[in-house]
Length: 204
Image (cartoon, one colour):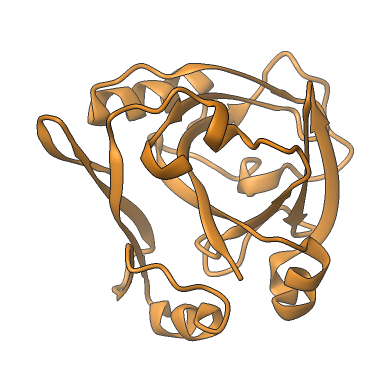
C-alpha cells in the first residue's frame, strides 16, 4: 500500500525552490541537507499529519553524480514549482514488483537517516514526472515525524495530466487517499491546497 509521504518543490536553484514555497505558503523552510549520491540538496517544512514539504535542487558545489539525478532534475528548467509527490511503502522491492515503472531500488543514507527509493534509470518518472516517487524509510522515525509541524494541513493534491485517468487506474489497487484528485487536461501539472490558521493556501 502506498501512503503519501511528502511533496516536493523543484527549482533551478535551492534558493528559487525555497522562495517559491515561502511566497505561496507564507512560511520559511528549515535547513535540510545534501544527497551525495545524486548531487542535490534540500530544505524542509513540516506539515500536519506527519507529512512534509521538500524544496530540492541540484547542488552546485557537489561533484557530478555517477548517473542521472533523481526527480528529473537534470532536465528541470523554468520557474520553481511543485513538481513531485512521494509515497512511502512498507516494502520497496514488493512495490517495484507491483509497479515496475517506478524504477530500480537505490539505498541511501544521510546522517542518521536511512531509506530506499525507486529511481528510474534515466532519472525521469513516467507520466511526465507525475508518477509518484516511491520511498521506504528504514530509520525508525522518518522526517515527517521529526520536523516541527507547521499549522498547515494538506487538504488536496491535484495531479493534472492528459492521461490522468490511466495513472489513477494504475495506482488505484495500491493507493487510497481522499485528498488526491486526478484531472485530465492538456498540460501536466501538480497543485496542492493546504488549510492553515488564516484560511486555505495553494501551492503550484
